[in-house]
Length: 269
Ligand SMILES: [Zn+2]
Image 1 (tube, rainbow, N blue to C red):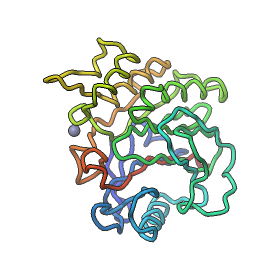
Image 2 (image 1 turned 90 degrees about the vertical axis):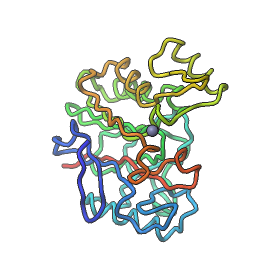
Image 3 (image 1 turned 120 degrees about the vertical axis):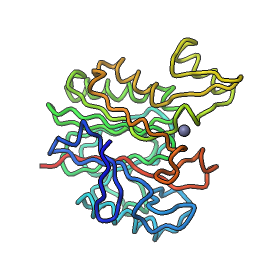
Image 4 (image 1 turned 60 degrees about the vertical axis):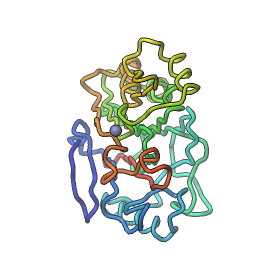
């Protein structure tokens, strides 16, 4: 990924998406916000115990850095599921973002409309962006372990193909910072779900000293390829959130006392 500092915010861009002028996208880091520990400092987690004024100021800074209006942001209360929202317009809302989300119960979004900023919030879960430069369609996905087992990434590509006329051969993908196999051990009851879904010979599920470690980014990389996206069109950040607490919020790495960073993207012109 490419590191870029804009108005004091340290942002990461996918190298394979940065050349597309009609696409705005970024992964935020902890750097550039106003929140005190343990939310230091660019906490964008509206559901965290951080002060609402801090979160709002952090969002204001992000909007200014990327040049979008906060009223154009579409997010959902995420539920670790596999429901996919097709966004054709900014939903009406009584209470403005970031005080309230536009949607509830969705973990993936697709749009082909300009000037809508899609956003997923994470702190270990896998943030994924898909972009079809031919049909000009973007999708964002929040894939935690439940979403990974539920194949939310694969299903999102299927909706892009079915409803937006995309060809997987032209889709570019980016898999952002998330908890690595180095740090993501799971309980036996969770390991069973991964073995049931991905088999016992999957290279992204490993055992060491009786503990199962899961490579969530790798499993999503595999799903995107299974959906028909070319391997050379998928950029894997390779960054573990729990190993890089100076840059990212990590639910596991900070025992739940942490904030959220985001992956956001929108089409323009
Ligand atoms: Zn790690």
